[in-house]
Image: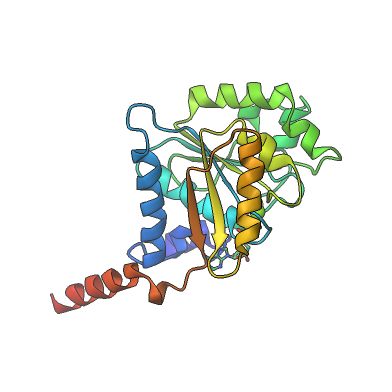
Length: 238
Ligand SMILES: Nc1ncnc2c1ncn2[C@@H]1O[C@H](COP(=O)(O)OP(=O)(O)O)[C@@H](O)[C@H]1O
Ligand SMILES: [Mg+2]
């Protein structure tokens, strides 16, 4: 326990390693993993992107937790902070933001020199790097495409943490490079029109949504909570 706290003390407290592994929250991330990996058994998706209509819906936290549960089952996983406007992955994982994606895209660093580790087996992270003055241009550059092609040779799963759709075009550009796209929707908060508008903007470039992740759900009203309670009681009865 002491060792776990030493390694992960700088993580956001809602990062999965800080949650009870049997909790409904942890189980929901594993359920998303199962859905993704079973969506195409012969050719499982490699590049995943979680986006949302608005900021603060939970893209970065969900991307991070999804990356951790992917690495838990032995997938060589890379989490890339592609939000070059309001990057957050470094803060969630207690990393230094510098030397990351923007330096790679400007040709100042090789990607293998900016990989960061956080003490979780199989998990690698690329932080945003310095905030550039032209995020959409460098995200949409040929360098970005080549960079992802190289990463696909090395990693089993690459998760792109991206900005929201309605404010900036970066997500739409990145959707063209992703194999699997999820919309994060804040349960009972995100207006339906905003979700529909985002989906139509993705459809305009022929990027399909593979699924919707409802975030910030009241778990006590979820069926997972029943199983958690059931599981806990069984253990106490032993
Ligand atoms: N499932 C959740 N439960 C509780 N808090 C959450 C959850 N998902 C996200 N948050 C919190 O909401 C805020 C926004 O999350 P973040 O992942 O940064 O959103 P985004 O990347 O969409 O802007 C953060 O403070 C984060 O810790
Ligand atoms: Mg974010």
